Length: 354
Image 1 (tube, rainbow, N blue to C red):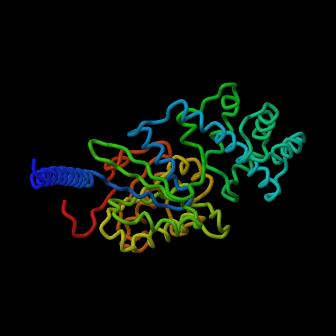
Image 2 (image 1 turned 180 degrees about the vertical axis):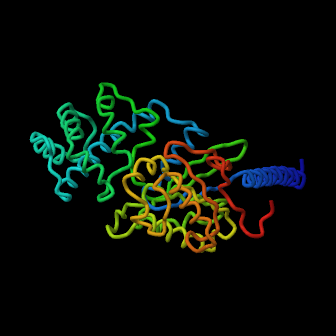
């Protein structure tokens, strides 16, 4: 074989390999383009404790892999820590609100619980179980709990504290509801993908506290939809960061700011009125009119929810006018793309086709 023929053969092999690689690249590009068309990015926004992380957990249970026993076991110490955090918050509030314990031994129980370093809690020892049960049964603590709007207390406090015996059993494994109720502040950005009817949803959860909001900017590009969560039960509560600012007013201001961002002009917007079950619990003893004087209806959950929805639909005067509102209980979530509680939850951006 001559040198020329050998070179021609080598070139031919290189050309073939080059063509093969090029074909693979083009095939991958077509695949990526196809996948991009079936991938939707849903950005969850809202103030702190509006229920974004719980919504992600619900989507994981309903449409994802759910939580295995090993996954649930990983929440055990968090449940314990939530219990100690809740009781410590009420013990501090007892002093601030000048509420007395009815049972004298609870002074010692309060001191015992208060000295616990919550971050180091990994077990639930019997002495602490008994102390917490006795404290929770004290009328003074119950009065403190009834005044929880006057201090910061997790929504899950009552759920855990009324079920301490079950949680304290040997070999305790958190239930699905225990996992949903765990409160861990979101810091940074968490993304959870799941498939629904051949469509990939990428749900992005970001920190809601003011200190976390500067990180949101990285999530804004190429977002299909924004879901802004508002906790209906927070109408009578103040911010963690500021004890003279109403949480509902903060949500309203943040929502109106967000929908003006240019990144969102081509995104559909869902205003999700969350935690209506908690609203039902408190609205009869903490009246809306005390915090929103313009409310003139009966103090019922239905009227309160209707008022919030009406505010959202107002001609841009209050909530911004770009979104339809929908409501759900803290423990129930609809599949994406389907309106919660049978109501339309989205509005197409101007100029979009149907």
